[in-house]
Amino acid sequence: MSYMTDRKRAAGLGSAKTGSAHHWSMTVSSVALLVLIPLFVFTFGAALGGTYEEIVAYYSRPFPAIVAALTIAVTFKHFNGGVQTLIEDYVHGTAQKVALVVMTCISYGAAAVGLFAIARLAL
Image (cartoon, one colour):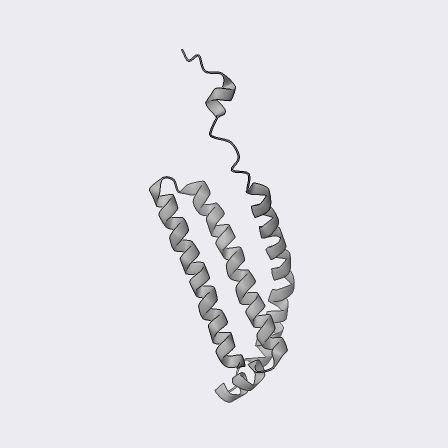
């Protein structure tokens, strides 16, 4: 028989006090992607099938390059937040910490590679 109160049993299991901020961040990035993805599809579709020189000339213009860069940055930020939630829900212990670090490095690394590629094309 346990003499612990309900409050004492729940101590330490409560909110991390970041759930609202994380949810708001995911909502804002979702709305941004709702606008950016169609813009990206239309700007990228116009460049599809071109030669290397035509693609470089197309992405040298500011609008397609900015749309592509924003899409890459927001997409990988949104991906990172979603995978973080997934890992926190289903992985526990040391594996959770390792998985969070690895996925954060992968998402920021992929975003950096994509932004570098766009910068190389645009400049």
